[in-house]
Length: 177
Image: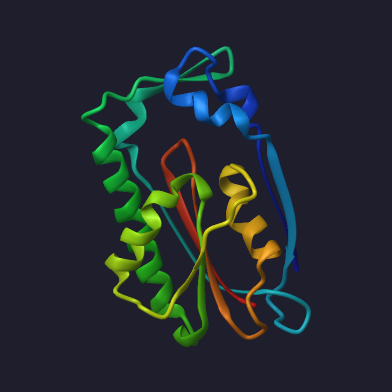
């Protein structure tokens, strides 16, 4: 059994002078803790994990006194969205290979990337998936865990939790609920 704690201190990293960070000012910092077991009797069971990092966009972000400064030219934004979609699609496909039952599959993603939800489902060509659009706030890596706790799938279902971080690391966990 393990305790997973995921926390984001978003308020310390946004730049009040950066126009693209304006929307982030309305969100609070977030944290979540969950106990996960390899024993399905006592909790969610980890079936598989997968992750990858894309270093292509690091030059557009830097930190000054703990505040993230973002300089992402408009022509790069579509490339960044494509990188997110490619990473999530690749990770999800690798996790689906390990899935025991794809008839009761749920996917929880970072809320901040919700514009990619529909293209992700299209790219996976997987019509029966339940993709959860959580509306609790923006808590980065904690988003999918908070969504799982708020909208828990039926026992015996499988859930993929996808997250991403400012370091352009993408991660997925396949759980048996």
